[in-house]
Image 1 (tube, rainbow, N blue to C red):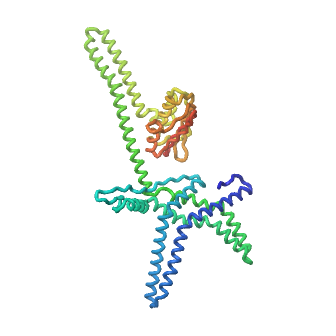
Image 2: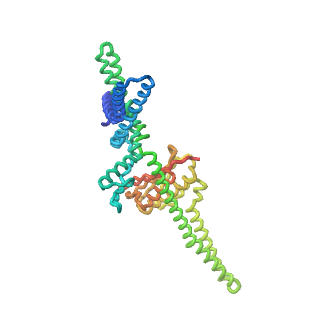
Image 3: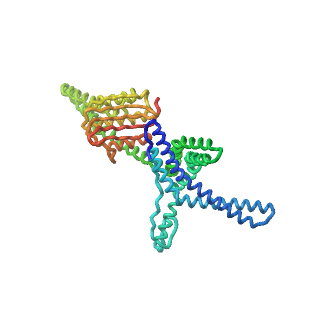
Length: 441
């Protein structure tokens, strides 16, 4: 059910109806654990009390019997809640996640542990990862049971059912209790006014009570902490591997450029100067020509070295900052590039360099593949996040596919907990945003 927009009486009536519906759904979803606990506890207390009533003893024995009754009831309640948790927690939390996505637009994804494959050993027994079984069917059954009982995500789901039973359930049930209590009081002589007040209070709370689902879902409906830690470790390992490969590739590029460019020119210049030394007395004119060529080679080598250094750490980036460095990129681009900035000061140096090279690669991709006529670069800073958005009027169809330049930018941004958003429908326009959390100087 969706809440209609607007501000009139019909809007508020619709909100009340939708709120009551969602309160009923949440109450039914979160009442399972408390209901089982209360029912088993009440039944167990009646049974143990009827059993202990047959005993006639002095007060020390009575105290021990009372303690035994309490422990027995607690044991029954714990066993009942554990079995209910294993049988219902996964289904209840899946339903809660669907409601969270449908009502609040919050998508929560988790991963459950799967059963281990069973293997037949040379002895004829079947191994399921935990123990041996005589038959394959028994091994598969035990594998599923072990996966369920040892799944951290399932136990985290069980914690959700308990937390929701003492937080979401009471709040979501307030409108329903108000209506039920008000209806009872209105038919009770002398209490009709109180009943009307309770009904009005219940109806007023209906549009808001169900929203308690949001904060509790964000905290307890996600992945188990162990899974979150493991996932983060995997991400950091992937980032480290990618950075290592990137660093190795960059070193190879620098070595290749030095070997094929400046080093070759310097070697040729040394040979030319050696030839000039032999000719300076016998043929001064030829020696002068050789020296002139060597001077030109030295100038070319110096230009190549400067270009190489500029590719490692552009001077304009170090001296003037990100905004001016991006503007310098725009001047050298083969297409018309407009740069706008709303960044009040310089970000951290590593973030600044990462965003600069990301923008440089995006502009290079536009020149190679987009067939664009105009490009805009927007730099902004808000909510402690630096964003750089490159928009072009090209052919579109860009995607961060495996092995592409966009995928490389995305991997490099993850080293700073950043992200890459690509919006490039076929036919264009293409809009790529790089966002990195950082602090400004």
